[in-house]
Length: 602
Image 1: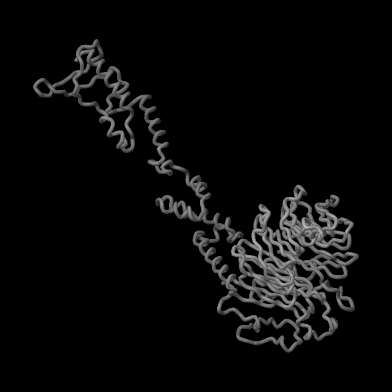
Image 2: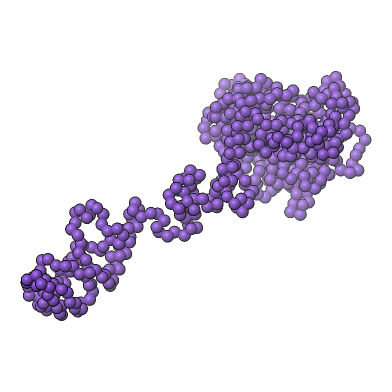
């Protein structure tokens, strides 16, 4: 073999490499390419210019012969057409570039390469999966074993539990399988919803016979506080079956001759209880330390409004034209934070929740709505002459209140106004009714929703993103006095004493309960409901309030109902309400007998 033949062999080999391209490392060519192109010959030695190799070839008579490869020289004769390709052994920089290009091409073909063939770290894959919901995680668990392990990681299901509001105070180490925990929570939620709709549960009456007539009721997380005309302040903890809680006593040595002033207003949060008495005295109790007050202060005139912060130790009171705020400092000592003078009598007062720094208040006085901040003058949010404010409620960023329109103008009807606390501007106007709005609930409503009750006996649910009511129900005879809603139900109370539970989506009444006096307080969570019927007349007609025998006045006292729909509280061994006697109260009535039954612990 001459030098010319060797040179032609080199050129032919390079042309074959250029036309055929690099071999596919995984699975060969596609069927389509295999049908269109001829089989690719094997690659030979590349980048080895002067190497020689002996190779067998066919002789003239079909016998094998030998061909010697020597250094290149001038061309002599054309190569044989039928030739066996040399084995492929890529080497050098050109082969590395071909392999890199093939890898990039394979990564782009996502339909052929599974996603996690690119070895992602487990933490990064977990970060991707946390954006999926329950349904998507279930589908991903059916892809492969590796995806099943990843989709059932307890961190993902712990995050889902927190996002859906289940077990918010739990840690990830509290339960071994958070997927099963989420399933149990959802099953309990379905059972609770069924119990709510069908009125399946227990109902108890919270009464304190020595307190005489009920004046005010408030509740927080199942703990109920009530003030009476006798001056007593009573607590109940409805989270336990026996409802045992102390009577909040006055300070030692402060007993004065004669009847005590009645507890006109009461408020409670997770750590404090506050009562405002008719003589202008305010007392603050700690639910952790005992039944004696930890702080008190005095107003010169009658208390007209009382507000307690939901997330901090701060109390706001309004007496005549003065608004005063008391709060505990970092050392636990109470001090006066602000005193603001308003030119009109304050009717309603609310503390804005979730405020960093000094407390912020919203007060309504006749036609005006004020935004009050400590150390700053009072700012008027809304003021229209002849349109008094009828109800008020606040959230962390907005305030909603009802205004009374001009009766002789058709266009100026009663409406709900929504203001932004940050800008001080009106966000939207909701509703248009001929009756006065008597109650509004913004703080406990779902996002972008407001529920309000009216004297025209209707309950309206508004979506602040729309101008028309999202839902309107009719079911009270003398007007609506209390409202609250969640994502699927509405609970309302009327002046005639009727408590109604509504299905929000269907707009239908699920059930109702009736008592003698107007409903002044409604509160509920997922598994319980608290309602209070407070009489308007604190001194019953035809009776003396100082009379020791109150048996004739039981129907005039008012009543508090506690409904329980939870499965955990309805066990077969649950004690009946008539048998829940603590034997600690002094009883003087023949119908308040302490029964001794096997359920009691004497």
